[in-house]
Image (cartoon, rainbow, N blue to C red):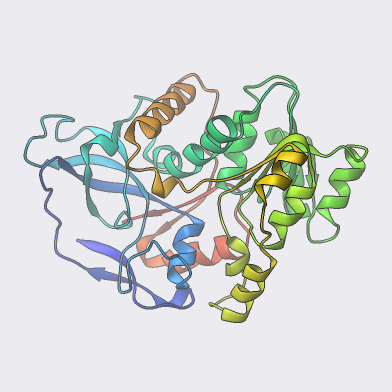
Length: 340
């Protein structure tokens, strides 16, 4: 089979398509013939050598795929070979074939395309988890979401519309604002030309927001915390501020680490604020949580409440372009890879 390999830490040019042995499903696993695989910011961080969970290079990454069941491991009776499925993979997904535990495999609704299926697991699970399991979104809440035009950001906008009277502030470059307004973002904010924190304070007359969803990290966690009104929740789910350049920069990483705030339980208690973190990749073993949320999301898709927006699709041989588009913050929605 062919797969996209990270050959070493570096820029997009370190990605190579290589022939690899076909994997064989072990007990409790299924093998999937991949039609589409999602690309996430974690993949960019892994390529740059900034993602501690990733296997050491050379390696194949990828957290989510959609395709057809190709083979069954020992003890697995269903889904049958040929079934259209999506699956969560802890790396190895950006390949023509991937094996994964059957409990992480879900049959597609009849109307769901492989592209939509590959765009759903990481982005929508993250969005649902940060909003409802951790952020406890309520009617009338104000939500600030960073990188609002990305895959998670657009999923947040769609899910916020399922709750009454939610006001959403979203940071994104000005070229994406019209799209964000149409998607349900009440107040798009151009973080490149103005202080998003000051803009939120002005729009809320100094009151702040109830939920801050922050995949940026460093000093932005401090700024987000200060924007919370009483009973507010800051949810950290990424550290993309360390990956802003073309290659890994240890001084930049150090600066962001030094800018990361320290939170005292006494301070949190007196301020009536909550700070929490989410790493969906570390929840794979909490199968009940993941399964319930993903099943709910598939039902929302069937009901036409949510629908992933596909920004672009690249072949395996064009993987460097996919990485570059995400790293340059040019994408609106999901970027995918396909074997052909």
